[in-house]
Amino acid sequence: LYFSAQEGILIFYHIKDLQYEIKICADISQPISSLIFSPDYTSLLLVTDQGTVYRYKPARSGEAVKLLDTSSSCFLAADFLTPGNNYCVSVTISGEVQVWSLEDGTFLSKLNLGTEVHVT
Image (cartoon, rainbow, N blue to C red):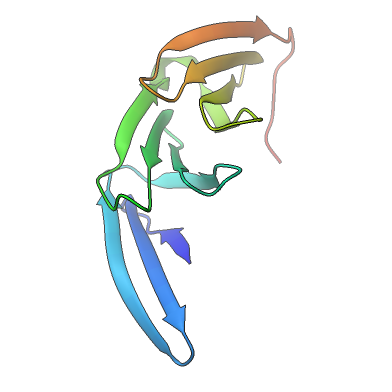
């Protein structure tokens, strides 16, 4: 079970029978608004409400790597672009959908929906 604390800490609870172990996986120092697993569960996107997206690979137990920072564009949400785990898509309040490479955070493409977007 992965969850995040308000302080921007990614925590893992390993639960087996009546025993559990707590592990702090990453500290990104920004409140995490959502956690999204890749379709094959090898990567976890950590999305902040400030517009920063980090990638954490549970099997490697390393630090979360900052992929992109869209803080200047009223960022709302991000998710993996399937099939595969190589790209993510983000959306801004103004309705701009953006595609990013998850390898290095390179901006690849955008589409303007022409309408304001809200998350419910």
